[in-house]
Length: 214
Ligand code: E4P
Image (tube, rainbow, N blue to C red):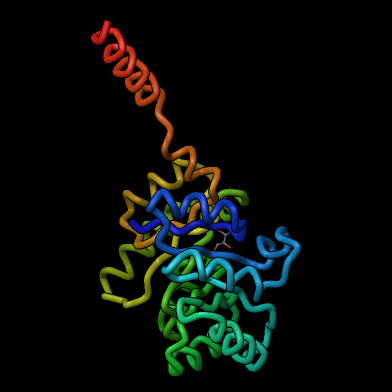
C-alpha cells in the first residue's frame, strides 16, 4: 500500500517527503483554502517537491467546465491528477479526460456502485471516503474491503485510494484490505511512526553503550 499525504501544507510535505515515504499528495478545495493561496501556486510548489501523482480538484460542476479546468491544471506539471466529484457530469468529464490521457481521481465516493461507475468511465483512481461514512454511522472500512474484492475480481485497472482517514486503525484496516493507496493526514502519519518500546529500547541501547565505555 502506497502512502499519499492528504494535505496542501507545503512545510509538512517538504518535511515528510524527506522521510522517503511519500508517493503522492491529494488536495481538495478545503485543504487549498486553508493555505490562503491560489490552487495553481500551491499545486505547482507541491509538484516541485514530490515526483508522484498530485491530485488537484476542479470547482466546476458541469462537464464542460470541469474539462476546461482539468486541461489548465494538468498543464501545471506532468504529475498532476485531476480530482473530479462523483456526479454524472463528472463521469462524462472523466471519459473525455481519459481519452486525452489526463489522469483522474474520482472523489466523494461513498458506495460500491459509485465506484464501479467511476471505474467504468475510465478513472485512473477512485477515492472512497472512510471517515465521512463512519460519521453517519456507516462502515467506511467495509466499503474499501468490498471495493478491493470487486476491483480484483473484475480486474479493473482503476487504483483505489482510501481517503478521509482519521486514525491509525483506519490505516491498518485498509492496509489489511489490500487497498492500493491510502491518503493520510500528516498527523496520522506521524502517529504511525510512534511506539513506546522503540523510544525506550533506543534509550536503553544508548545508555548501555555509554556505560560500556566507562
Ligand atoms: C482526499 O482525497 C479527500 O479529499 C480527503 O481525504 C477528505 O478527508 P476528510 O473527510 O477528513 O475531509
